[in-house]
Image 1 (spheres, rainbow, N blue to C red):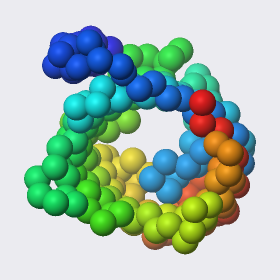
Image 2 (spheres, rainbow, N blue to C red):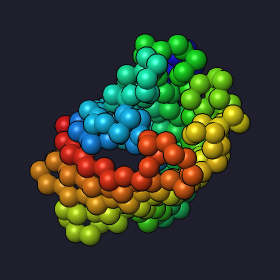
Image 3 (cartoon, rainbow, N blue to C red):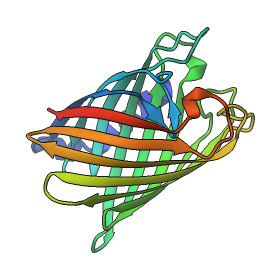
Image 4 (tube, one colour):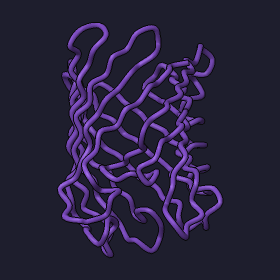
Length: 228
């Protein structure tokens, strides 16, 4: 938690000149049939209640917090996840931006070793984003480091409907993070319908792992979100 406080504190100091002007704060709340993260169910194939807040300082800097219930399965104390994050985005040419980000994952009620950090470098262009994420202690200090590469694309069909595509490659912790698989691909395709600040989503999520674990099965995820 100390590392998160230091980095978030530096981000706040860096945005101090912009605080004299209006900071745009937004929120969101989501009900979902499952919480999947990189293709793996974080709620043991059960529903999730999620919400967060974001602060946009208007100069490329953003800060935010997001939380969801989780279920690590029998024998675990993990029932909640809290993410604190900071980001900076700036244009490098017309229509192309470079993105830098930091996220600290916290699991209240568990030992501090379960918490971990991720550092992101990415580029965004024409509705697509390519990012590389490094975690020195992925899902806790006993799991080793991981590198995650993501390619995402969002396409607007009309003012109300959009389609999201995602594919990622997880080069996981040295001891294996998903049922002893240390490298795997995750994918997702989703359709969203938004009106009046409410968004209905339906997504197909899966991985290429050979695991028999139910939390890694391909699945459909239904969600409803409200922006605040």
